[in-house]
Length: 115
Image (cartoon, rainbow, N blue to C red; front, side, top):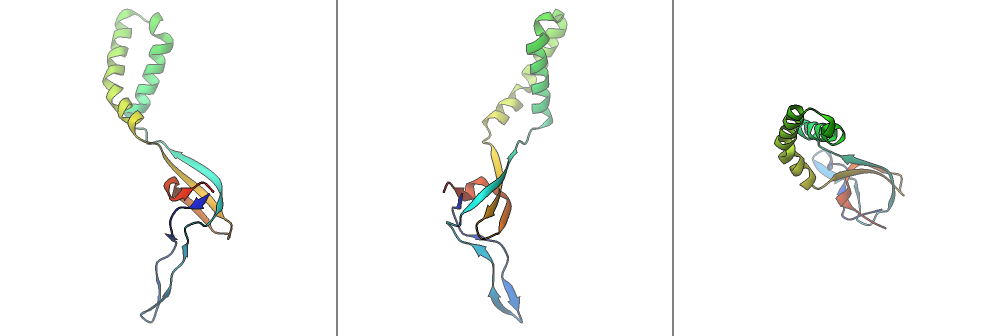
């Protein structure tokens, strides 16, 4: 992977009121991905929808009519949260070890391009 843009790693260093520098990595700096983290921000409603929908799909046909109807109503009431969750783009962060030895952890995937 390569950096798509310059990234500042530190704020400016100041000595006696004079800025003497800062640390950054230049666009095009290459490195190796060590870890990819998928950030699924599931709400309680999304987890409950998944749980109840799975229950309905697996056992709904064998349930008493009234129990199945109640479960179907609950699943239907949670469907907007599930739909909104499905429409959100995935958020992925990465840990990259650059060829110069620096490690950038938790960086958004958007700041990198394939090398």
